[in-house]
Length: 492
Image (cartoon, rainbow, N blue to C red; front, side, top):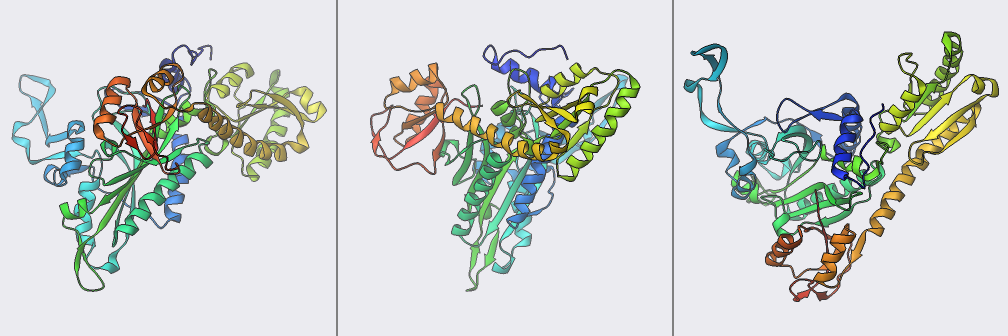
């Protein structure tokens, strides 16, 4: 545990990459651009999955599974969607290998095993799902269809970073069909709200809910709702999106229903998703130069108990009390690990659990047995205190709530300090260069202005905030009239 992390203020990107690997979350794989999510990292993802899945089901959705492969003819049926993802697609052209006739130890693609139609490896599932829905929908009685899928997707990436951008990643994708435009719009906004609540309540990450500009929308969508979070380096991260697809996919795949009046009408659609990119958001929002800082609600182990001892006899005595405390904490709904390994010293364990972001550490030594106390160490504040053993359970329960709230408030304060209103393009560039973070600026609503600002500053419109007041003004770049401020930032 002697490897120290690069300090964030010296090289934020290097700090992030080192932390992901050293905290045992993930590592690069033998497949270029793909990652291995290690057990500790996957345990955090499973906690995210469980909470999101619960919320999806509470809002009436069911899980299903659709094929990994999409026939090219289906994929290209919705033109905007196909065009938007075309450059990122992995394509299967053959179905068999054979021994290389020139080298019996090697394999080659069998030229006689060419597929009649190429298969696209799923970059997103709208095409295969909407082709399926055509057989599921006949009348208004079949609607709404509220389906979610937990899956992997492939989007070919040239520059990758663990969790944030990999060629293959894990996600969920919701796909719903509705009888009316209004129902679909309500669904799209509702699921964006579900993402926002999850981010804030479980991840302790404050987010801005908004709409994407036309150029930043999902390919094939008429409207894209999103949640945007601010990382400690002043860059934004899109943490989730929910799309109102209109009737685009219903028309592309001829999905119609007979209304109560007997008329044949195309259905209305949404899709929405979050991915393992949330792991990157979690790391970059809360962690420090010592390692991960995890909110209790998502920590695989909320508490770790480390015995301080000399010799087997002391370990046996301490273990009796430690196991007793562990049982009491588990009964109170706290996840606990008692690390009684004799292969590592207590100092090594302290460093390991600090690096892995365990919210609370309990140390018990011989003197603690005599005094009836334990030492509690908080990961978020790095503070320690001695607590009577009879008070541990109630104290820990209270600290779980307090740590969760403290992390959220700290992130919220950071975002507030790094959200700046600007009135001119010179001020815009100055804030971006010296302070970073979110910039609230007037925009004239044109793609030309948006593109020019991006070219000159690398900052993009992260969203048009849903809760922003309508405020007449002048576009910071063009000088043309603007109806409200939008949120700009450099982003991941």
